[in-house]
Image (cartoon, rainbow, N blue to C red; front, side, top):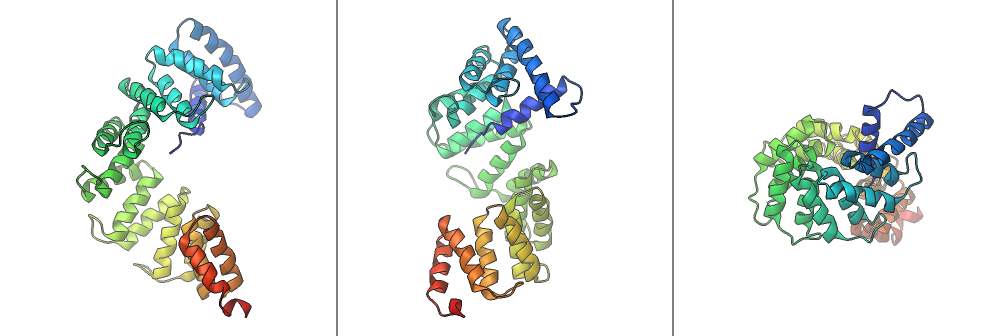
Length: 319
């Protein structure tokens, strides 16, 4: 689990654009950032904690200044010490990922906890993930559920999705409830959150808590596939390959498996290799199948290694 700094960059861009005119190009944007760092560092010295946080983001992302994680950390610490929730959240990100500090999940959890207590909902979700995975805290699914529920009620869609996943999996101490999972995944999908659409599609695909409906699953997978969720593209390929609820179409299966494989979904690559091996939707091509199976094997997919070895040792590949 990673809270990469792309998130911080996104929030920073929102901060800058909220206080500026439209920029003609990236150069103007950087120049604007250079002006803001001067203002924010000055007002931070006057104990404006929001300015400390925002200046920290500029240093963390190297926008308008030379990237400096240590300087960013000092600014985030000042914001967090003054109970500015987002400052604590960014410190958690630093310790989780080892940005300018030694990676320390225990400290990350501590900062996420403080950030959550001050109403920064992303931190509540992050802390819930820590309790689910046992990172920096003792693994405790019921505590994870409590935090995801808090974040969800406060409007954090990722919290809703994580809560839904707990209900659908029925982990220790969590009563399995597909209907509740369906409701929460649906809420996320309505907000155009791709993983929510995907997981809701899985429920319809498998008939979990709902009447099995392949067409509904297809509709949901298309939404999330179009948003770049390659597991959904793979699942679409499987619907077409198997003819589940739709006319069997190996060519369309190939299109979706290829898209997902290009996106580094290794299971989709294996499925694509299977099409080449069997000549389904494509001309039978053992060399191409071997190439793809080798790729999946290199990524640790046991089935890919098995198929690679079996075809390599057969007479078929020599024809």
